[in-house]
Amino acid sequence: MQSMLHITTLHYLVLGAALFLLGVIGVLTRRNVVIVLMSIELILNAVNLNLVAFSHYWQSMPSRLGGGPTALHGQIFSIFVITDAAAEAAVGLGILIAFFRNKETVNIDEVNLLKW
Amino acid sequence: MAPVATPFFFYLLSALMLVGGILVITRKNPVHSALALITTLLAQAAIYLMLYAPFVAGVQIILYAGGIMVLFLFVIMLVSIDRSIKERQFNSQWLIGVVAATALGGLLIAVYTKGASLFPGGPVTVAAEGDNTQRVASLLYGQYMFSFEIASLLLLVAIIGAVVMAKKRI
Image 1 (tube, rainbow over the protein chains, first blue to last red):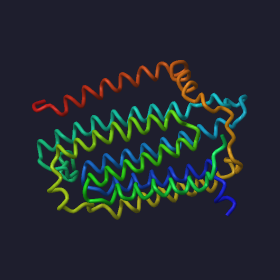
Image 2 (image 1 turned 90 degrees about the vertical axis):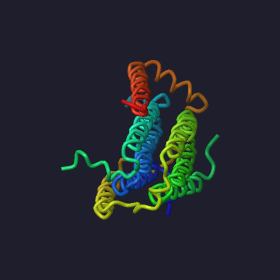
Image 3 (image 1 turned 180 degrees about the horizontal axis):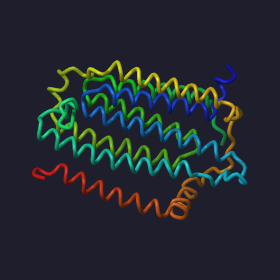
Image 4 (image 1 turned 120 degrees about the horizontal axis):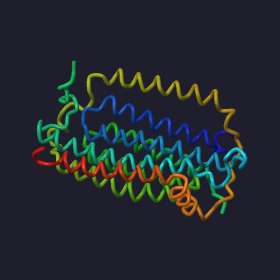
């Protein structure tokens, strides 16, 4: 019970893992392309949560190990991941529009031209 | 100011995030999924605040909940969803997908239980407060200058790619 009430880095990591798994299930099982893209956003958010949690943990480390209050590298990395997510969403949704124009559907099972 | 009632808010926000995530991957209507995803993103922004990352929390709200999700809703508006709602929502590999995700979850649980000793149990104390944005900026424009420029190039490529993809005739 005591470990439940002390919120440590591990709690944030477990939350990130749960969110990541939800995203993986969504990517693997859904047929609607829009929801698959949203699941990818869930995965990227789980990664961001891990990065920020580790950044917070790292700030309490001694400076000789590279920690200390200025060690915000995880937050910087999470900003880069957010940039990446924006680029991915823009290109992915552009591809989705092109796909919908060609096939009149948003079902990802119809994208089978390269399927063996 | 020290955070108050951290466990309560942590569990509240985690529950919000997980319920939102479950709704994202189970709803038929993509609009409902998008709204659930916005809930998840806002709860996550609050969790960033609990982790002393106010700048990332602001970026999360403005860029994710305000930018990317609006893009999603516009695309949902452009593609007609009437037909896809009536179709089967999960593909024939849903069992394999769930099994693979469970295996991955087991792996993560194993790693975290093995590595629990790596993370000390005490509450983390942070001296820096109030100048988080300043520190992020000095890192971003100092040590990470090159990555920053590459990220801007990536965004340029994404803009051109999105415009080319959405053109009538490629």
